[in-house]
Length: 74
Image (cartoon, rainbow, N blue to C red; front, side):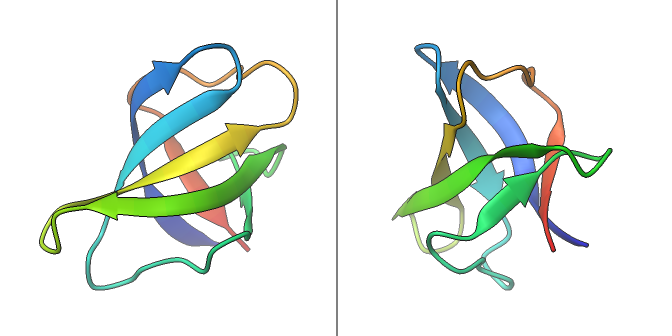
C-alpha cells in the first residue's frame, strides 16, 4: 500500500480533503482505502500549491474517517 496523505478536513457528509506529498502524486480516480484496507472512496481532484498539494476524495456513502487519519492506495 502507498500512502496518499492525511485527512485535513471533512466537507459535508461524503467528501474529504487530504494533504498529499508533492513527490508522489497519486493517480486520479484511484481507489482510496484506510489503514485496515477498507474502501473509503475515489480520489477525484488534485488542487492547490505545487509544493503542498491537496486532493479531494469522494467517499462511498457517509465518510467514516476523521481528521488526522492517513489514507492509502493499493
